[in-house]
Image 1 (cartoon, rainbow over the protein chains, first blue to last red):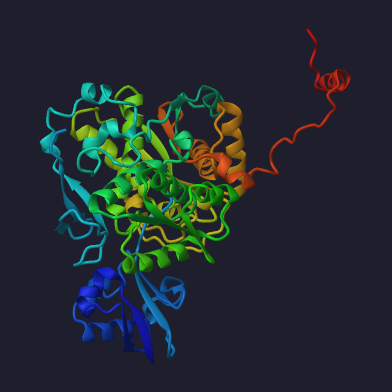
Image 2 (image 1 turned 135 degrees about the horizontal axis):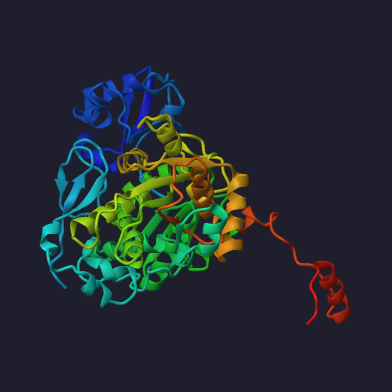
Length: 92
Length: 416
């Protein structure tokens, strides 16, 4: 599957300034591995030592947080849009 | 003005430090950044006498807020009443209860005027001319008003289905108001992408570390108003969980600076059951926050994916506090109780705070014989929809004494 991944500002130093990159992967976990292969250093920003997505990083497939789907195992289809969003505050 | 004691922005996860810039995420581990201070520079210089000699605004504690020099935005904001809630004490069966009443915070009637004056003063320092926010309502109004008064351009992003009072309470200031088809969490996600693209100061994105510090002023005031001491227990509403952590930070700062004794203050969090990821984590005895799809009338607290949830959970646990959540019906009942006993019309979040406190008093989590402060953070006039069907309607009569006499007799009122 080829999917597009939107890269947040704080991580663009690792993608040569690109705000969106296209990578291959059948699951969210695969996509993170593909990102790491193309842009070394991305995975350690997104995942902890055990490979889990860090608690303050939000990954969305299309418009849904992967925590509501199958997390890293969430299956992808061609053309899916993935967003990586650092947690931000509001309310109290 | 003494030299600023702000040292750096520091990653809450890995401890990496960064210079003071409009940025909010660690480049190394992607963790959130927080303002770090060199408190020792204030030794002997930041005294009760100095603070008391200053105007009654949140800026009397300016050394502990992360701006350089004097504030350029919101110089009059803050310093709201701390009310001894004698009538509510009787109803709840507790000995010493106070309301920190930010429902009358200047200028937009919520505690957001505190965080916004810090964020916008900092934005001006950084040279921004447009400010923006993702908001559940109160923040939008506060950014719009404070930006207008400072001559800044503003964009505010809100969920499309907010209470009319909050939409109007932002629109009146001539801001660019954008309603997003989705929940707050969707607004938030969009804004984090917008913030990366346009050169604006987004108060809760790229200037968030500074913005969040403004909340501490609520707790500084609370301690000064209690006669330079901390309460034994403080109850705060939780959306992202930020306020909970900043109240705790403020108390620790005052202890460190010798302004108060350590009272072993426990911090308690309040949520609506329809959006209670932090409260659930505390009650389940875990620090894992599972995001939820928010569904509650307490829209200012409807953040299903709370950015500071983990840290709020830690503050509650380490301080010996607790967290609770209540139904929308209990929120309305508590809003009415606060209004009828203390004359304070709080927004839905205030109902959440009082209602959760009542539940924790009943369960014994909050002791009846020690001091308790409830933080009321917003005004009920902005969330009228929540109570419109629950309040007494006027009884309509003609301008006739006879008609009123009939009504008075029915009420059992005797004439003089």
